[in-house]
Structure formats: C-alpha cells, structure tokens
Amino acid sequence: MPAPAIDLKKVTVSLNGRPVLENITLQIQEGEFWGIIGPNGGGKTTLLRTILGIIKPRGGEVRVLGISPKEAVKRGWLGYLPQRMTGRNFPVSALEVVMLGECNRSNFFKPFQREEREAALHALRLVGLEGKSQEPFPQLSGGEQQRVLIAMALASQPRVLLLDEPNTGVDVVAQEGLYQVLRRLREELSLTILMVTHDVGVISHFVDRIACLNTTIHFSGDPWGAMECDLLEKLYGEPVDVFVHHPQCQGCHVLRSKSHDHD
Image 1: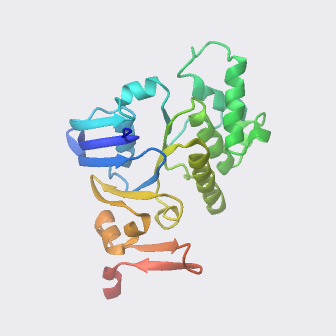
Image 2 (image 1 turned 180 degrees about the horizontal axis):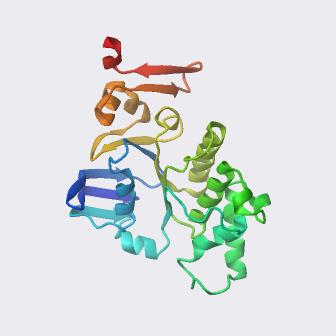
C-alpha cells in the first residue's frame, strides 16, 4: 500500500514557549484536495511550515510521501505558496516570476536554461496564463498574480502543493476561478493539495476533505460535515453565520449557530 502524501502522527509544536499545535494526527492520501479552516492564530500556517520542515515539532512525526519533509523538499516534491509574498511590485515579467520557482534546483545567479524557460511556460499554461508570460507582474490583476504565484510553486513539478490563503486580496469572482483552477490541476497532475483558507462557505464546494484546526484538530472529513454551526462556534470561539452554496440546493443560504437564536 503506498504511503500517504502527508502523514502527521501526534505532532506537537511550541513557538516561544507557547503551544501552537497539540497532538495533531492527520493523514492525507495522494490526489486528495484538502481545505484547512480555523481562526487567526489557530496554527494553520504553522501546520504548513511544519509539513515543509521549516519548523521542527517538539513531539510526534511528520512524513511526506513516506520520507522526511527535508528530503521531500530536496527532491522537489513539495510546492508552497506562502500567505504573503514580498516583491509584488518588482519590475519583472510573469514568466520571470515563475522561473524563480526553479531556483531550488539551480544556482540562483546562473542564467536560466532553455528547459527551465519551457518548464515555466508550461506552468503558466497550466494556470491559463501562457498569453500573459511577458506582461509585467505588477500590472496583472490580483487573481492573475495569484495564478502566476501558483505556477511558480508548480515550476519544480511537485507532487504535493501547499497553499496558505491563496485567495487573499482577490475578488469573489477571481476566488471561484482560482478554486476551479486548483481542482483542475489536481485532476490533470494527480496533485495532492492542502490549502489554508478563511472562505468557509465556498471552499466546501471544491475540496474533498476539510480539517478544522484551532491548536488541535476539531474535525476532519467530509466538507459538509464541517458546516455544522455548533462545530464552527466551538472552533472560532463565538457564534457564527456561514453563507454557503450547496451544489444540491438551489441558490445560497445562511447557516446560523444556535447561540444566535437567543440574541
């Protein structure tokens, strides 16, 4: 039986003496598309950085495709789009941004080779932006910039893609387009995708599984199981309204936690 794409067993992480992740056990199979939701400060970014091997857990074990995160990164198996990217106003083309994603395999100061340029063009083609390859990156729309950055994360041809709130600063229409691109990439490339998001009501329509994280895992499984408002109230620590669109329902509706009924 093949190893899971991501396998965390009783992982505990502390930063500056404060527990951020506690007893995290999570198994993600190859080819699955997962969403991670939870409040600010709940450990979502720390979880991704732990899977990448940037943060070493105080306890537990992390494996990526059966090997250590450090070795998986070395082999180019992990692609990563952080929450905040610096240099968005730097005067480079979309193609040049994507080629930076290959620097983990090349000398940073060495001129890019033809095959690296072709790989970058292919990555742009995958996200539907091959025709924008020579346009200045700062002049692209927010949604297009995010697609270029996803292409950059794909440049090393990873098997697992980690995304930290890729819809930040993107309008609603572009957000849905971004999710559709990711779902298509998962299917075409057999990618495993793990994405942190605050877009609770929409993301459930696109992912296979959801994990609810606030220091510990409060739920993992079918995305519509995560839409129980009592669960979300426990996760976020306060009453919530969730605006959702269910593919089996006509239109959208609002889910409300029971605490709101007494307001």
